[in-house]
Length: 302
Image (cartoon, rainbow, N blue to C red; front, side, top):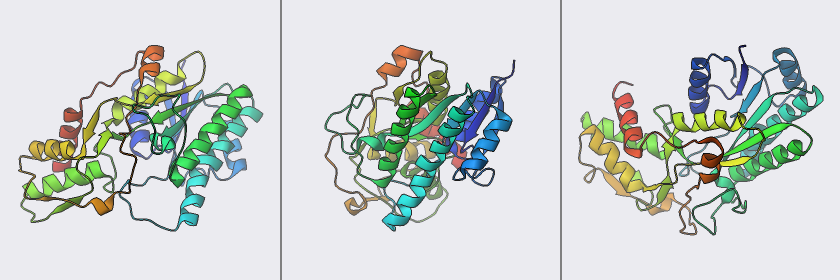
C-alpha cells in the first residue's frame, strides 16, 4: 500500500532531499511551498489535511538565517519566525487532532534552542535556553509538539544541527566558502572575509539527516531526538577542505573578521545523537570531507 507523505517546506534543502528519499521508497509525496497552502490560515490547513489524509507530515517550514547575517528589525523577524515555526505548525497539530487523523508528525527544530549551552556535547536533557528569535520560536514549536503528544498526537521533534549540501543557500558560511573557493580557482581576484576561524561547528550532510527524520517516525512512540554528527570541525577546517577540493591555496585569499560573530560562551555547540542511534540505528554516513567535496563539485557545474 502506497503511503502518503506531506512535506511542509518541500522546496528547501531538506525538503528536496526528503522528497527524493521518500519517492525512492515508493511513497507518494505532497510537497508544499510558500505559495501552495498558506499555513498561517487555519481553515486552509484543515481543508488540505481533510482532503489528502497523509500518513506522515514533515513540518520543515522555516525562516532561515546565517549565523553571520546582519541584524534586522527584531519585531518583523519575530513575526516571520512565529508564523513559520509556531502558528503554521500549531494549525497542523490542531487539524490532525480535530480530524482524528492517524498521521505521524515530524517537527524540524534546531540546535539554536540550546543558546550558549553550559555543557558540550548537548543531549535531549540539555536545558533549552535560546538566545535568538529563531531559537525562541523553535522552542515554542517543540513545546506545542509536547502538548499535543499528551493529547494523543504522534508528534516528534528533531533537534537538527548544521547540515549542508549543494542546495544550501549562499548566505550560509558553508556555501559562501565553497563559492569563493571555486570562483578564486577560476581566476577571480577576491578576498573572503569570515568570522572566527577557530569557531567549532557540528556539520553533517543533509541527505543523512532527512533519513533520521523518517526513522524517527517509524518508532513506536513519538519523542525528541538530537540529529547531529557529534564531531566538531572549525571554520578553518571548512576553508582548508573546500579550497583543497577546488585546488587552490586558501591562505592568500581568506581574512578573519571577528566582528562578524557575536560573543558566545566558548563551549562548542555539538550534538550527541546516541539516543537516536540506540532507538533507530541511525548514524551519519557521509564524512565531513566528502560532504564538502560534493559541494565543491556541484559548485563547479552551477
